[in-house]
Image 1 (cartoon, rainbow, N blue to C red):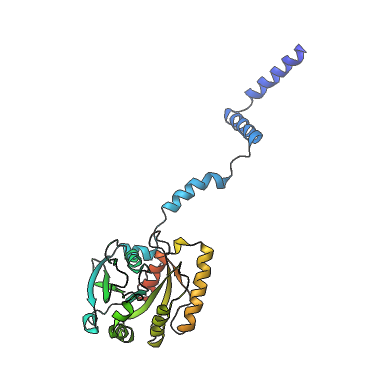
Image 2: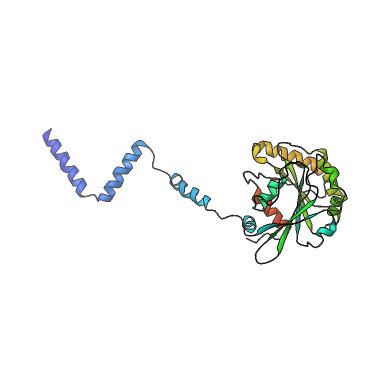
Length: 269
């Protein structure tokens, strides 16, 4: 027995002397790891780096476009003479009172307080024009905040809204806002769509406050609202809706890209 132990010690000493320290360390480390758990995969070890790179991802061209331009209030208008001199490409935002229009426009313009939120739904009774410009030149886009409809504001609109929709040549698209939790078009929405269809004004639905619903519910609501709206304005309504949230900024970049695209200003990649 003593001879056997002596022989074993001799073999072990020879093995240690003939093995490099690096190989011995790696072998023992791998044997220990294999005994308790599989060695870490490339995916798991690279996950922190991927997360860091995701945080450092550059913003989209549309987001950068809006960030590097200043937004400012231009005019309040109640007739064509007030805004006739504004000739840059233009988009308008419309929707029922209290649909979140002011907050959404502020988010699109990367501004917190430019568009004032009325404490009285339906209080706005005029067209409010805003400009998006760079330091190098004049305004490149005009954003129009239309009066909310519903409550009493529909009666306050008057003929100047019809005049705006029927004669405004630089108006490229109206973004019509529908609140996600409402889930359907009201009669006032349908009346507004009738105007857009009559005067052939391109329009797109924007589902607001979409963060308050589950994605499956949002998809279902969007599909139902688009189907309902298409029956009323089949020749002017785009078949895709945009889901947005001013609170979480969900979909704001998509809406910004649509604004730039329809105005012919989407930067090339």
